Amino acid sequence: MPSLTSPRFFCEHCGAEVARDARACPRCGRFFASVRCPACGYTGAESLFAGGCPSCGYSSGGQRRGLFSPVKKPARSAGPLPLWIYLFSVLALLCVIVLLYVIMK
Image 1 (spheres, helix red, strand yellow):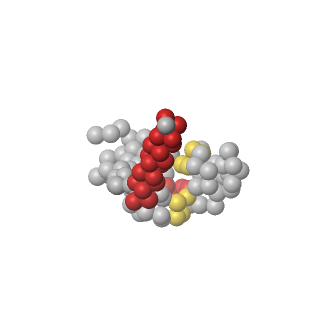
Image 2 (tube, rainbow, N blue to C red):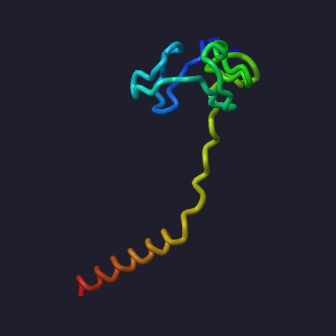
């Protein structure tokens, strides 16, 4: 069971961590009118988020079914390269071979 920690607050504009009671971001200076949950998008007053999101329970630490841990996006598979990259590579290789043939002759 993860240890309980207080929620962490971040500036939506620049991503800097800010104090819970901050009225403006110390990095970019943007003023805060409300708090928005990064997991569900619920928006409300800072006092509503004292124990995490009142809508979904999202927070930086807690115990409810993993909702309190930061949301991690699954790793995206790179997949195959586009066809033009293969064609360009073959063309470049042919140019190098022809250039070496001309130089050696």
